[in-house]
Image 1 (cartoon, rainbow, N blue to C red):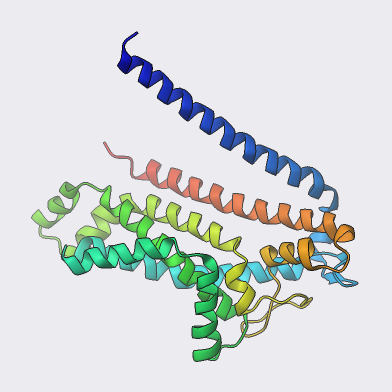
Image 2: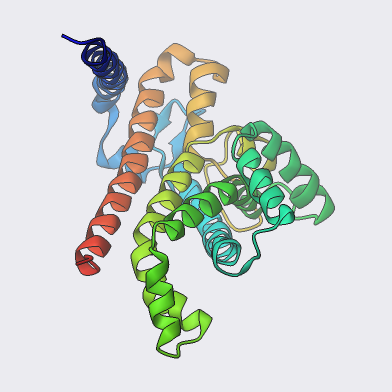
Length: 284
């Protein structure tokens, strides 16, 4: 066996071991949460509000609060991020300024979420005076998701061959017409997939909403300018801050199971969108 073959076998072995370790860790976590949280999952748990200091009842207002914040995040981040990516990839000149903008966007993707939370307090809660509410939290998560959306959308646009654009322009189409008819249909699966994965990550964030609107106990259906309860923050409270932690531990696991199911649903939706668009616009 040659040295090159030995290196190849060793490399693939290391990759397989790493993949097995990652999958085993994920399976262990999911199994632990499922076994400890499935016992509290019921219809009453999903549609009732918390009672008796969150030691009884359900998590319906918490689910609604998470949904409202995620909806505002989508409305703010998705259109803005996709249009920014289209401009950067299709219209902007490839200059030093453009490269600096891309570098800044990449760096923002790695900024800790707590920094976004503090920025959201300064901008939305204090400067614009929205106060601690659903809107402030949703816009803060939108800022958190925006760099992911721009990066994923731009990378998806780059995968479309330049000949698709040139063919449309050669037939007399305008720049926007060539993008709309010959580029976006093939880039949308990747754009939406990356965006949804970013939103799934934002739905599980605690730090940004901790300062901008999440409440310790708010057993009412949230409104746009009211405080709210959210699944990730509720799990944090039930696991670390509650006055009867051991008593509510099963409820915390049940809430975690609901959050995992929500994130997995978003990921599955992203996979389904990619499959549908690839099937519809299959390249010859």
